[in-house]
Length: 259
Image 1: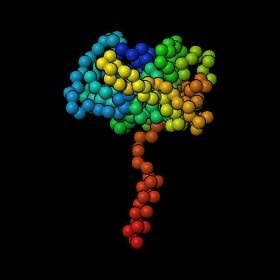
Image 2: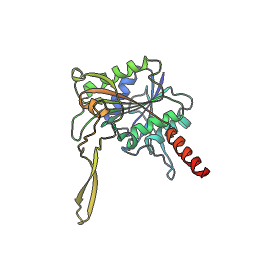
Image 3: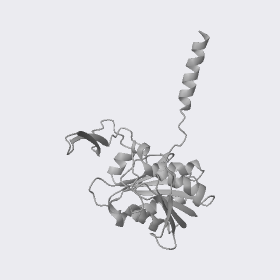
């Protein structure tokens, strides 16, 4: 198989290095990723700025790799249309330095890149490490935990279709309790604005991780299972149409038209 690897943390991310090392065991690897950190840009693409592609030998001569001065979705899009057309069997985005759970999946550049691949009919995975601020990543455990999960999914007939989000707990291998398939827990609000005063005396606001209490938190949701030291796997929908609401609104509209 031929794999395209990307991320939103940029070419210098240690998570990308771990992913490259892991994926070399499964097939031919290509890398197209942002030249700098593009965290939390979601699924945005570049319209008003030209894209520049630079080839790099960061991962050795055996792995073809490029950087792009754009978003993660830009990287996948330009790989599919320009660099590697009709080549890629699967896209893996990550390993992100921080989990992507609940609402994060709408903000995440990691997930945005993976979703872009599915637009081209290519199955994709977003991989994230549950890393809190100033916490040291346990890279000795990340690679085997990801490889074990990926290998099991790869052997399944239907499990590798569409878009999957994998979150890995930042624990030793023997502390990981296993793999759980989990829904996104939208009750979790992880980021809040904090007020500060800058050197000019102006009031400014920084978005920082400051998880609020979630009384309606799901016991089987991705956030709780990750806290319980499980690897979580969440299949994500691509089609955003709410078909039930179409029927409801259409019926209401037709009823009113008869009055």
